[in-house]
Length: 283
Length: 348
Image 1 (cartoon, rainbow over the protein chains, first blue to last red):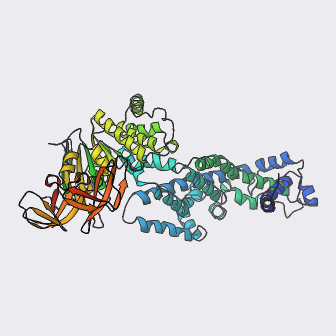
Image 2 (tube, rainbow over the protein chains, first blue to last red; image 1 turned 90 degrees about the vertical axis):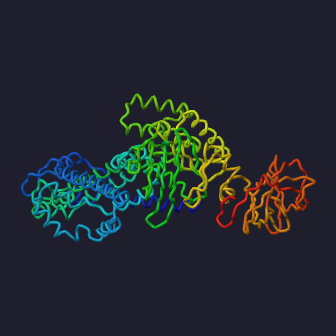
């Protein structure tokens, strides 16, 4: 087999790209399987060590925090609930509001759409104080509702759904009407199945968004029971750091590796839908 | 009382366009009616108003004795075949056909039977599990028809369903639609801009122009006795020759040619129409012209010529030997001409 110079060059670039993405993760994983002494003395590792089960076991089961009551497993569960809640509600709400904007011809549809769109300019970080005030006045601090609710509206997703619905030919709606589909049925039987790919993409995107929230859970939760993974990353396994004990670098790397798993799983599972949608052009 | 009655139907769009103007029409049970007209004449709008997809600005539509102006499309019991078929892309052929029945709460078993029967009738029973994207144009057309038939509606509405097919398939489907309609006896309205489709399919034809019904009649009536100049030009292929002329005492003057109409009419500004195949070409014809162009069509040929500066065409058997540049002699018989008053375009 002969390679043209250009092909070799592009492959080198691609391989470099892959290495750039994969190596840090591999280093983290390899390091997470070593005991703290060797990490302390020898630095980051490239090869696997022998402390895999010890480190991961400690991460999952050791109680930490100020009260020594919360485990990292608990944080994973919290983050998962938060991300799942945010992603599901974001997708459902955006799909429905886009449906209303496109198919129900009320007078203010266009201004309302732009109003929604403008919220892109005010992300949570900008409105964090009013948001906190409202949530705390409602008594929702230290609850899952409080973690999820302020983040469920999405201008981006609404915009994408709106653009997609606009490409669906009117005849489909008309034909469905003649077949006796009311507006609810049209949404369930037509728009949702037709936008399967889109739903999967939005869900992945929003799940990762919800999972990686830092600031909001940080100010929202005072009870360690509601801590999330990203917060924990800063806090967990740092106790005793100032003392005589070694920094627990191995456990922290194990924690990082574990924290990457839920979003990776979501991507891997939904990817099938994704590819299915791409192969079968349904229009 | 007729099966479907349209009374003074008017449609004005929000932007002020008047699509349909004061149209009244009666359609009997089992009839196959074709709406024909140039694009933008309001024929589709009229059909969509019957389907309930378009609001009626003024007037009244009644179906089977009930006024249906404000009845939801799904409850009007009409089925429509769309130009692009509007098949449900994410559903199998079976589900495409079953969807309307499911929404009516019909039992699964009955749906199965109905869909299978109709699929057999349309010869698409092999395709029931496929998605629309895996079907050819003709098959999609059949599925769209099947979806309409399976619901056993009071009226079929066809919105130019053949215009996306190639010529051969179009002829085939045209025959099939006609056959199915005869077989089932369901009242049907077919919208088209193609006069051949209109002539071949319809029991009656409604010629529409600019939102106004120009003429209603059987294909034969419309062809042999067009009421207006528009109908005369629109129906028939090749289209009717229309000569601007002055009629004095029953004699039409077209340039230097005089045609005796055997009447005593006087019209200052008239149009004399004659179909290309009604021009009699013979060696002892009264008038002589030069053939500017000859179009050979196999069994027939079309000759293009001029009287004065007015072009006309005649259609004749291609057995006659005539080439471009030759002169030929012809007669125009007074019994075959159509006369129209140019001031209002109506027949005299």
